[in-house]
Image (cartoon, rainbow, N blue to C red; front, side, top):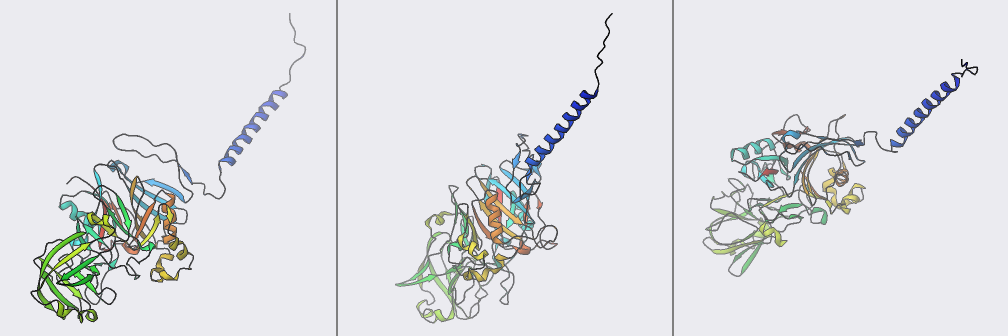
Length: 450
């Protein structure tokens, strides 16, 4: 019979188990320490599962830029092919809503819509999309666009300051002026966005190059459907403007028997059917009004008598804009080829006095913008003026953030209380006012089907 004389003590086994537990705790703490990145919020890395309604494909783990605290995908079940809608939370304290369109998606396109179909009226983004639907157009997303006058003593409420080309019609084009809301005559002001018939995106300053020829006399035209004053002395008013020109003391000439609408490349003969030295002429449905500021008109009114004939020429430059069917303007350029505009950087530092008329750009406000890269078009709204939720951005902060999320080119639209992004049937952001503010025009992502 075998007898075990050397009974083993349980102490070594207990010590070994405790050692393994201690080692396990040390390893777990080391892994947690290594996962933490210095100077980043703990929520910088977010796993986002985005579902496309047709393929049911779940995206892999995504690492966001350092400036993004979180990104939410909104209404994913309703996304048509080639469209996405996201809400970003910026680490500086702002909520940013972004509607994205794939540029190669065959059933989506960019478009614009003039508020209530004329210059002198305003409309909410929601109202414009409802009107588009009644016309058989299917909008997917829309954001408020150009700057303009809400109301003045002349009655010019709703008048756009910027370029607007819709269905090939040259509805509005300003003279480049360093005045609030306008595109200043500098690289920073190259802010008109347009799409060529072959799908090329353009972002640059656009010039009218309009001329009125009567006999051997040639008169340069400064703008279309804009304010006629000492800074913009010769303006054409078309039926898109409204019932009358609302000018004061301008010399005005009614031109008829010409082809309408005006376009980016245009030539037509005309007949002067009326002369009015007091301004505020009625705009005929089949003609235009040529308005000349009084000081310049003193040298011209005798050269354009009633019943005289002539030729009206328009040739937008750069030349590619002559075929653009859809275009819209803002007032300042933010990004060029993935780089923040140098003038914007200097302005953010407070050393650029040339842009004093745009001083609100250095303060945090709600913002609206349009951007694009080689693959996508972006319609963007930044919420602001809401303590504890979103205080808005300066233009520099907005440009820097856009660059972080992949936008390569961007322009600034009208912001403040006007900033509203409509998408998939509703306003998705939180406008600064508790109601939706009427605006001048809308930049739209829509289906090509009608």
